[in-house]
Image (tube, rainbow, N blue to C red; front, side, top):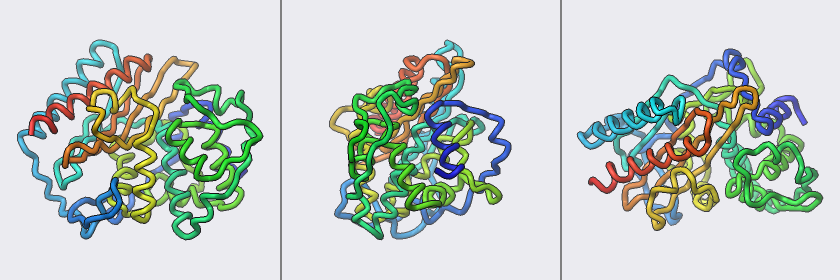
Length: 336
């Protein structure tokens, strides 16, 4: 395995955040307009996407409704910090029907942890656009159930891949996203590293998370905000990075995530949510990070909501994310 991906997999599995590494990376926030804009859309046969026809105008009307929601979210963050339920949090909300957006806590950076499994998903589906047979490629799981990649997950998946068993790439992708299975993730990364070197880096670099003078993906430390991470979700929704087929397929898998203790908890069951959570614990400080980011397909009014938290109690942090999701749904969707 190459050094970049070795660093990636070790830090991903062991949950060791070294904030000082951030200084080595000057993120190149490229002009991502072609990947993350929202404006005029075309109709699509695919259920979970809304492809772009033209670029965003950047004239987003800030209504009384959005201003009121912003105040409520800021108050919610403040009250939870004061009650010692969290130590910090940032929220990004965006109405996907050319509507306004909110971003609180914009100066805070977070460790994406399992959120970045979406980069592996994007890489495989990009490659599958040219070679669909790749998804049926068989991969042998060489990692045991007691592997540190699986054992050190704080929020355990209900299913993990079995040792010494073959899985197709498509099966591994689904398990990596639905169950956040670290073993499936590691198997996919190893296969990319051996057969498609540099392709995962290419995906991450496209979205601006690699410096010009570094070949390594900065998976260690706190380096991403909810707004920055949401560029992945917007690219999928707009079908501006992958084909319509694979954009919709990726989001469909994300709607089947087994994690229900975040954005999903306070939104009616009949509303689909394509989301991914991430968590990381630091044994030396007892610090914890818990995030949940996704697209909520509310009635004719889909929106992105990405919540990232720092604290010392996963339960309290998940309750905060639930409260944010409930506040947005009740005050922005039901109120209109």
